[in-house]
Each structure stands twice: as C-alpha cells, then as structure tokens.
Length: 349
Ligand SMILES: Cc1ncc(COP(=O)(O)O)c(C=O)c1O
Image 1: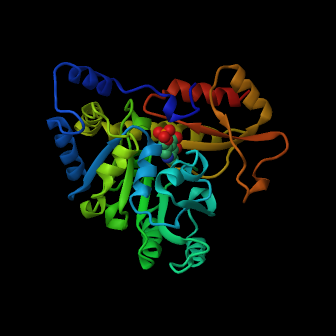
Image 2: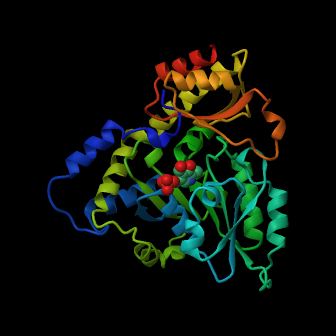
C-alpha cells in the first residue's frame, strides 16, 4: 500500500525495456544523437507547434532553469504560497535565477487572481528598493491535487501578460492534469498563455526524465548555456530521450496517467462513503487529501500503508478535529486496486 508519493513507484516496464534496447552501441553525445532529435520533434507534434526542448534530470532543475531564463536583476517570481518551487526545492530556483520567489495565497493550491494582481502591483518595474516583478509560475496539477481549468489558466495568463511577465507551468504532474481535463497539451499550455513548461515524466512511469519546453524558441536562446552551467547537460542525454520515446509511444503516458487518476478516483469514492473519514477538499488528479481519525492513521501505518500526514493549510485551521489528522495519498501508474482497497479497509477499522 504505497501511497506516499508517485516518486516511490518504479519505472514502467516499457520504459525500462526501451532503456535496455538503447544500451548497446554508440551515438553522438550531449543531446546531438538522432534519437534526441527525433524525440524533440515528437514534442513539437504533441504540442502542435515549433518548440525548443531541453532534457534535464529533475523537476527542480526544470523549474529552476526555466525561471532562470527570464530573470533580470532584482527580479521576483510569483508562485502559490505552497508551491513546490518555494516550499520544496531548497531555494534552487532563487539560486539559479538570482531572483526571489514570493508566494501568493489561494485556496486549494491555486493562485488567487486578485491576490496576484495586488502582489504584482506591489513590485513595479521602478521599485529599486523592493525589486521588480519578472515572472509568474503555476503548478498543473497543483500540489493540492487540484487542477486549474483552462479558463483559470487563461485568467492568470492575462494578468501576467498585462505586465509583460512570462508565465511558467510546473508540470511535474502534467499528464495527470491533462487527462483529468480531457484537453490537448496545446490547449492546456501555449493556447492559454503559458510561455514555458517543466514537463514531468519521472512521476508518471519514467526512471528519470524531465524536459523544459519553450513555446517560443526565440525565448530559449540562452538556455543551452544556462543548462550547461547548471550541470544539467547530460553527456548520455539519449537515455532521457529514450525514456520519452517509450513514454509517448502509443500514448502510453496518457494511459499511465489515466490509471493513476482512476486509482485516486477509487480512493475518493471509498473515503466519501466511509463513516469515519472524509475528503479534506475535492481533488481531481492523482492526489487525495483526507481527514481521518488518528487511530485509523495508526492502524494503517501498522498494517504497512505508506502515506504522509500533511500540514493543515493555514487558511482552513478548522478542517481537522482534535482526534483527527490530515493525510495525503498519491497514486501512480503502479498503484493497484488491491493497494487502494487494502488502504480503505484500514480506514474501516
Ligand atoms: C509539484 C512538483 N514540482 C516539481 C517536483 C520535482 O521534484 P524533483 O526535483 O524531486 O524531481 C515535484 C516532486 O515532488 C513536485 O511535486
């Protein structure tokens, strides 16, 4: 019953086998192989336009280097106050970009558009003492398991565009959000005003494959240098390309995300119908947040369930009663119905 994180899952067999097939022979290094090029073209097909793609090894690198590409001295990037970039990356985006991240509140992991306007207005381009607004980043699916609708992305994009701020999307769980909305990659990104994307593969079945995608190649001219200086240009980059090659083949990536989301749907419906537990808030991708009795959390832990107890969001302290705890459950391509039902059984006592 591994529900701690989609990072705990292994690599999907098709991806592991693709790596094995690639392991014989020689090919040009540092991203110059035929396979690298072919997979870059595949990204362009998937996003229905010319894109610049840079493979990197971690989501933190993808976020940090995307944001580094648009920074200027005194720059400020706005993100949700509980976003991975500000809370879980050890300051890497600030380190690589030289900019500061400033959190913007909002319910259920989504930036509140009005609060974003206020924050941007507080850091005008002339504010030498305070610093100046230089970028906005949103997470899709969010850290709270929710998914921005296309209209919500468009609204944030319009605010960013008004002040000429590039908009980045942290898509560590891009596929989960995509299948949850049932839209195309183009619709969820550049057609709604996203300028650059951290495209995650690792959580959804790859071993170690993340990509930075620029929707306007002219914005990416400095990126090869930014990536190399950050030690993220892999000499055997083709092994990242090989993972994406298998990931995209026959839409494997979408099937894996649908499976992960389906397992979360199963958790959601089991928790909704349980007597003692409840959903903390509605989620629609592969993360579930639930309020359960502390005793049930203890029993589940003793029976081998792996999950995290989660901090209660400051905006909603009343969410959790005295004998209760908030937990986060994450499903992946590797989660089975037996895992989910076993966990739900623990909640039943
Ligand atoms: C929303 C989000 N962004 C980015 C990442 C990337 O993290 P890493 O650098 O560990 O690959 C994660 C991983 O947990 C995440 O949840």
